Image (tube, rainbow, N blue to C red):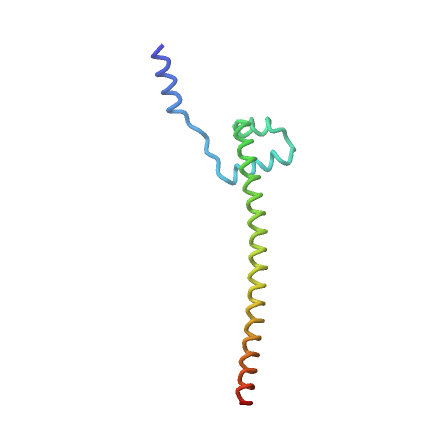
Length: 109
């Protein structure tokens, strides 16, 4: 009994997993979303468990959602910076007008 447990441990310690690049994962995920082939077919073709493909799909969709959100935030930040610059220019003009008015009033005294 102890011997089979040792063998199982050794097998799992020496088990090698196939490594996929980010690009390969994305290609498989996109193929699964297109629906040309079933998820089961894709998994067999690439030697991937369906649960792993589901995990990759979730990660890809979460990353896409984050990217879209950050894009919206950047757009908002750009708009805020533009508005701040506009207000700073207006404040500068008003400050200049007050300086001129102050000098004009000082001349009346």
